[in-house]
Length: 514
Image (cartoon, rainbow, N blue to C red; front, side, top):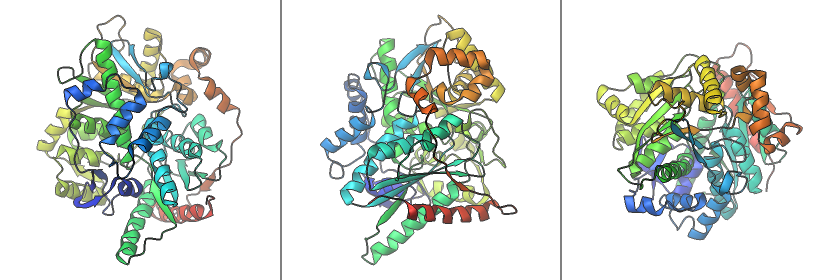
């Protein structure tokens, strides 16, 4: 299996090269050269597999055995989807009936959010290759809340002196719990940075560093010099490893719903999935799985007022908003979702020239208008709803009082979206529909938002009834002061980002390891 750029299919890389590159040299994103098809008998044979074993079967199709042996891949999957998870019956992702729908609880990993499911596999693969090559690798990440903790814990748990991480979060725009998940990790291989600005503002410096490195490596290879002593690698969801790993929980969820409905997996059983949506990593993973043959109907995006995904699906106007709006569902405060580019690539039948044209327009004008032909195709596969903080809080109350189920603000966005889209999930004793809501994080991470919605008494009730013991242990830990990137008064965003890029390089050079 080779990987190509969404903007130029002649750029072909091995899995290892694509994984370590993050972005393609032309600024595009890597995608599999083709998506292998899964037949109904194959899908049915997966039904009895454990989550790590299912992960092996799904991911094996995308990584050559010459790159990662069968034994090594099995070990990586077992380590990624077993250690640190506390779901009942070793299920990793419980799929439970709630109201008239099913909820896939994606938050039983080490950092209580779905990012553990994609991130741990990616980081264990990066660790595998770094140790194999005896090559230092520093991961770069920007987080609006959940990516950072998942990446930091996975790197620290890898205990690999060849692998380090610099993670950045916007000061004051993540929850105190999420911040502590990063700042309580005391490791020479981990550097945590807070910066002034919006959640997307670190994306440009990181992308510039990665694409500059790509071009530099190409020049070195042309001279026969391949002796780089440290590699920079991005692990936000533009890295192809993330959607590949996240496909696994789509297969798992589908099979568990079929099991509970008493139906055989296959094209006669179609399941719709509603997802809290920020950078569209889960939407992309689901669409890739659907293109492989997983019988998914609609992929439904629940957005908050930072609603570029909703506007794109409803009107074809993929326009970056002038400002980021602060919300209680902070982790999906995204202005330009990376993975929409991958979705467009698959939507257009791998038309790299058209995607290049579109994304060049987007990169230069911050506005892309999708014509009616492609918009119709987009709407056949996706739907969406925009949810305000007020609507989110109201639904959080309804789910708790009507169904006795506690949700975090992002899952509440998905419940509210499902309600707006006509699925009516908050019904007791209703006939259960083949519809799944992705619960992407535990409420334990969002005391402020849950308290705004449910009040102090509601939060106290949650603490007494369902607050995880592992989360209680975190609260008492001492924090390590993060490095700070300042926004100098009078500077433009572009000037500040240039300064931050230099800060990143200095920090990487100061880190430990072999």
